[in-house]
Length: 85
Image 1 (spheres, rainbow, N blue to C red):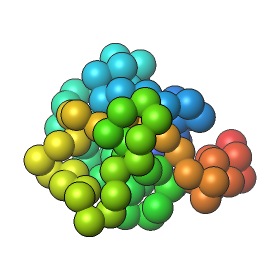
Image 2 (cartoon, rainbow, N blue to C red):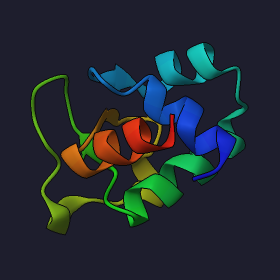
Image 3 (cartoon, helix red, strand yellow):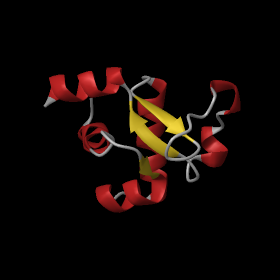
């Protein structure tokens, strides 16, 4: 796990919007998208359409909607984060 992946996961113990995550991590838009995409590919995070509603896998379009989503670490992501800390 990269330092950036670790830092982003550190903020995802609770649901966070893209803009809030960008502010908390001090990452630029394109940098955050890159890290989030890597975490998503590893199944360490999930995307939500609101603070409470998951985005169904069939409807997920990360490239187009990354800024609209909310994010939350998955159990696997939390375990990876805690074992790396």
